[in-house]
Length: 199
Ligand SMILES: [Zn+2]
Image (cartoon, rainbow, N blue to C red):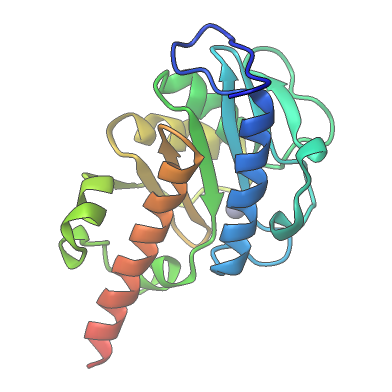
């Protein structure tokens, strides 16, 4: 743990480690096609009132540690922050235990939702089911809007993953990898459900 500097939380992780985790998770999102081109955004909590967030208009598959922005959870977000900056700010403000938030556009999950079906996590094996004890869904609201941010943040209190119809999904986690695993588990369950529907 060389280079670690604590920020108050008992399980505090170094800022460098958080930056590296976000870069690696962005690459995984792109590689697994949970985002395409410049879609999606992800963040991790630095302290009670500050996060690291991806910048606007960058490919999440080729993030750099230095490009991640520090964003305070109070006041106006910095210029250049992700278009969904309010989604991240309100999620951390509303769910104090959230240490990471990942937003992606998982294709099977969107296809399932567009077909009018709800995700059934019974399709998953036990460890994936444990990741998704509940899945919430919000009404259709504009990308990047404060309304979307408020609806998602409220839904994230009771469910670790929220489906946004015709848009994507957002997951919170105890770290970046847990949030990412929740999106992956939801996408797998949706893929299985769509496959069963075609059989
Ligand atoms: Zn989006």
